[in-house]
Structures are given as C-alpha cells and as structure tokens.
Image (tube, rainbow, N blue to C red; front, side, top):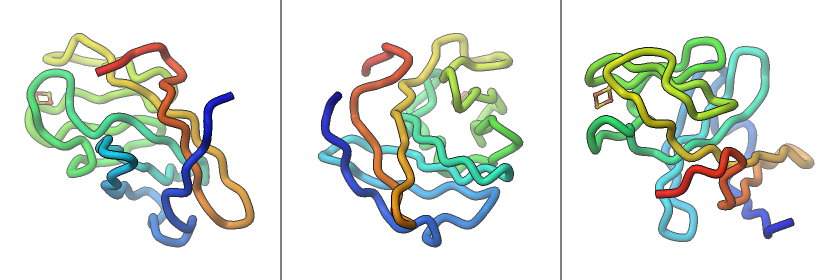
Length: 111
Ligand code: FES
C-alpha cells in the first residue's frame, strides 16, 4: 500500500463539483460526486493538454470542457470521442472529514 497524502477537507469540494490540486508535483482533479463519493484523476485530458478540473461533473463522469469527452471517474476511460485513451485514476480515502489520495493509479494508467 503506497502512502496516502491529505488533499483537503471534504467541505472544500462542493457536492457535484471539482477542484484542482497539486500533489507532490502531480496535477489532480478531485471530484465530489452527487452520490457523495470522492474521485481523483490526473488533471489533464488525454486528448489535448487541458485541465479536466475546469470541466463539468455529471454523475460519475467528468466532462472535458474543450471537446466534450467524458471520463468515467472509476475507470478513467473516456465514454465518448474524441478522447480514446484513459486518464490515470488515483485511489481516494475519506477519513475524519479529510480527503486523502495515493498517487499510485488504481487503473494502471501512468503519465
Ligand atoms: S481536449 Fe479534452 S476532449 Fe479534446
């Protein structure tokens, strides 16, 4: 089990929202989904170098604002074109009102 790093408090991310965080030099998009789950992905679209944290959360997906590909927050896979490659997904843990992540991708995708 790799080390987990505290990102923020759960209250720092509005429900249905996403924030950008930099963890040990890695840009991360941290999502608070409508079902109260938290998800973290590498904060760059796999199609072009734009920040996914500037996109929209929709259910358990994060939509890229530039061309509209949606990424499944559990698998990192795009659910539609133009992106075809998955983004790294980081394990998230919520403990005592704080959000922690590990920088070892749970889906095996690295950048
Ligand atoms: S840059 Fe994200 S879909 Fe094109």
